[in-house]
Image: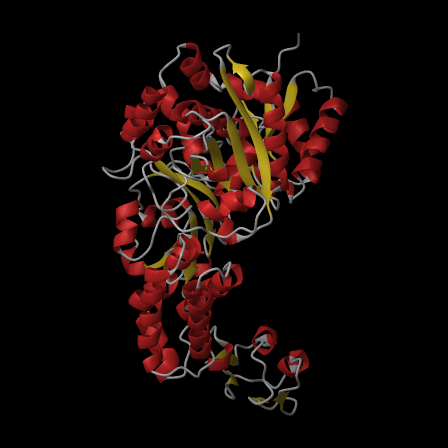
Length: 600
């Protein structure tokens, strides 16, 4: 048998796949054969490494050289220089390191050194479509120990309780307590269910997708353990149909687990049966709410139901049902393999473990981040994220998606944990973290999230159906320059009514982006209303493009680039902009080479 000297790991997550990683893999396989190295080097498809901004990413072991922005044309050089001759291709090395051109392991880069990967521990490390590789990193060891040693279900639940794990889907409810409620619930026919919420719908969020793409077996193993703990023999993974790679890898993983006897009848010859099925969602944000999700699995329109009874008592098909999200399950096997005390030692007193964030927006290093609870926002934005690009100033960060709030620059040292975020009007949410700079208008940001909520509302209850639309109307009125002072009082009153009376979490948290921006950026609302001015220069109705006659050379480039003919003037003479014709597109400012046009 040939000795494999080099392993070439290529990211095949959604981001890198969209940048031709499959073609890169095909070229590697071709070049290895052509250069006689196919017996000494192996190409491995992996999930997301996390450094999405630098994809496609290729990491070569044992050297640990991380190549970024790799193209098909780079492959021949990597094989001939690195694989054949053992010489690192420095021009392709990851520059996210302290020393330019240094060959540094991923964990030592600025992006990774503040992170601690538990939920993402296997992403970018193993081939997600190979069950043997998962088993090689202690996969199914926790399930095997529980079933072969016949550990009582209550003791399994006690381990989850002792870890302090809280639900990573948003509200942060204690996971062990939810398992306990489902375990204790009585079903008339003995049937219970276990569900996984993989209906990730927050704008900018891709945490759950990346786990499913990079480590699907960890979810299968965790759900099987949960089924044993609560007394369920059937599970459902509710995943977005818009996640084709995740769906394919889940289907592959479920098939492999059944083939190995790790799903189905008499698992580990213990007498315990458990099976899993996928259910594809059509992309409705409301189906992230647990009761709406279960209605959708049942084949009905995804609408929330009143609670109580809670799903642990009466959930899917009116049976006791346990529902956790992807990231929550992704922590389970680590807890059993390393001990609940090890997990509880990470994080803060009330927020244990780590949290995964999809870091996006106005940030240098967009990507997937996993940090211990209690890590400050500054560490995530400046140290891991590399700060705001282009010399712009950090203005705010949005956590929790449409259900969360905006954290201003003055609170950048806030620890990221459930209680700290709630105390400043935001929330953890599922883990989207959108960074904004000085060019973002916070009134426009609040309007953006309200537009999303109005579009995604199921319409079942009046506070959400009517209240959010009325709220959006007021925000639109302000951004169009028609706001009145009393609108701010109306907005706050309406927000409080919606929070108190909406049926489900989607409606109850819909006002959060509005309330948080009003609290921390009230001066921007007032500028829109009293001065008819957008300080960030975003709201088109409140801005003007003007020509500085002292700087204008009369080159006519601005007039040539204007789509509406709003600019006039003689050659070599200062031009003027007709504001009645101007559509505020900014083309004139882009075409001007002398800085003569400004936005006011």
